[in-house]
Image (tube, rainbow, N blue to C red; front, side, top):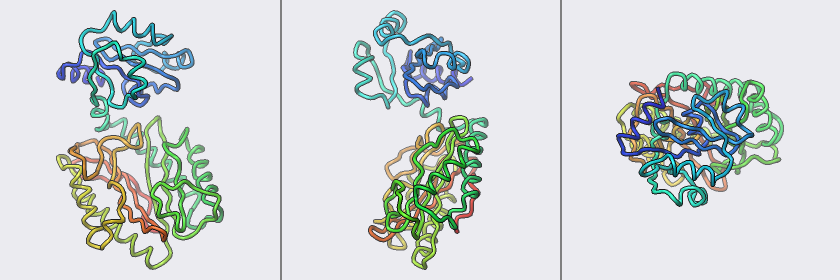
Amino acid sequence: MKIEEIIEKMLQAGLGSLFVIKPENIAYITGFKPSSPSILIMKDEPLLFSTKLDMETAKTVSCVHVEEFKSIEELKKSLKETLKGKMSIENSMTVGTYKKICGDFKTTPTDIIERFRASKSKSEIIKIKEAIRIAEESFKKIDPSNFSGSEDELAAELEYEMRKAGSVQTPFETIVASGTRSSHPHASSTFEKLKNPLVIDWGAYCQNYASDITRSIVKEKKEEEILSILLDAQKEAIKVIKPGIKASYVDKVARSVIEEYGYADHFLHSTGHGVGLEVHEKPSLSVKSDEKLEKGMVVTVEPGIYLEGRFGLRVEDMILIKNRAKILTALPQKY
């Protein structure tokens, strides 16, 4: 049982209880993703506090006992009566929330749940694969290489197709950047008509699990040259992915290929990241990461080159780490 394993790890780390408010962490443990403020207390007998807005759904879905969250003062009173020793909190807790709730307690931060989330179970991998299928099939239906319209219209059509296919919402704002705007890695789409080249970064959800894919559509010789460099860097990075390898080494491999071609200063972000309940989660395939890759992790490999004022390109695929890397995405990389 996931809950028992987490509690066991908590006890081994000297953590008697854990205060959880991050919706994705609550969903991971209980199966219920709150739409309003909820608090999960992890202890011998975990307890989920949910507002009236979510009570009916929480009681139906959650594998943890649910009680109504009436007020912070009542919650603090209950915690003082039932919790012993230090209370651990999520690293992601904001200062404002900490001051409101945790000021009266001795606390210690932890990322224990995020570390559990990094390696996916078989059922989680099935959901991620379905999120990928939804995203890819939707992309095929709109055929961006022959789309006539604006960046916004293309993004809207793609999101519409994903909604029809079962993605309740999108994990992030769909990026459609064309022409010189493609040199902005996280550009928002505009009402401008599509130009060349075209970068599309999109994803879907399946039962709270995300996908994240990027494709670049090119026409000019220089663009094709840059895309070939990125595909080479991605291929070499994927080759070295296996359990036990440092995440930073994957980044180093991809970056070294791009550096060989003289574009080191134009690779502006990390090589990739974990994907699951969040579109960006552990591990980070970055130069600063001290994490090691493990079986069951799902990561992106997404090298990019951005030439300011001219254009930028990125290619992104999702990888499952088994004894070696297994590529989960299946869309063609050239259009």
